[in-house]
Image (cartoon, rainbow, N blue to C red; front, side):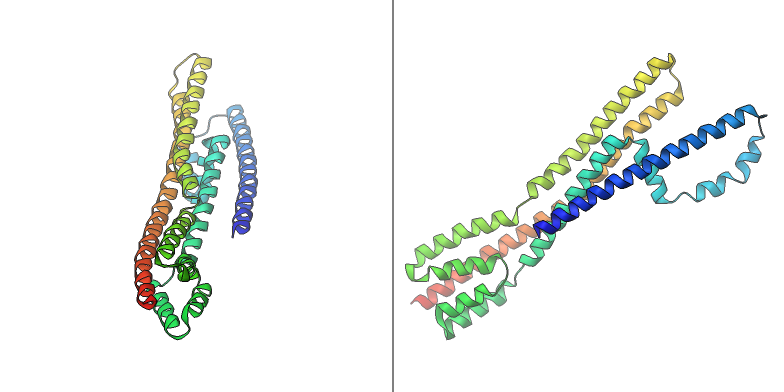
Length: 272
């Protein structure tokens, strides 16, 4: 599972680099085309604005798909910071998907498992119950197996073993949650950093022009705020997955605690 996760992460990073390069090249070509068109228009007589905007503008605007608009906004926000924010989203989603898959595979029907263990104790004793736990997937079955493995050492040793191994299993369930929370926190920070740098660039452009032009100010502020928007979107998406994972872990931990209490009652009953 870890190798698969690493492979998916590397594939996402490579795809990100290729897409970023392609988008930057397309944007450069479009910018060069626009500059050439402006030069030709300036050399010729000024055409009628109605003839330019009347027929061609509406179809051109309608042809802009969501992917095209997203690509344009991504490039306008600055490839450096936008790529870092997108990388946080890719890695964070990879960690979330890995946790969701792990938790779903670790889920166990505790009532059914308890019934199997009790029936095995009735018919085949401790060895049969251990075989049931060994063939069942999930942390609950592993905890039961640790308790059964120390069944002959007394109930106090069994209880301590269950508590200790239960803590280990809880740590495994909560693995990588700190990294997900890190990406949730760092994505908006990177967006705000891009905003601050964009505002500085806007003021530098104003200082270089020597005049407070509305066009210069508007463009600079737009570029600055785009990084914040993408950072917040990344944080919102990862936060939804994070809350789902935390709720799933809490549900599984509660099921583990309830099942271990019932498991101890079964062992005490058959110990007598």
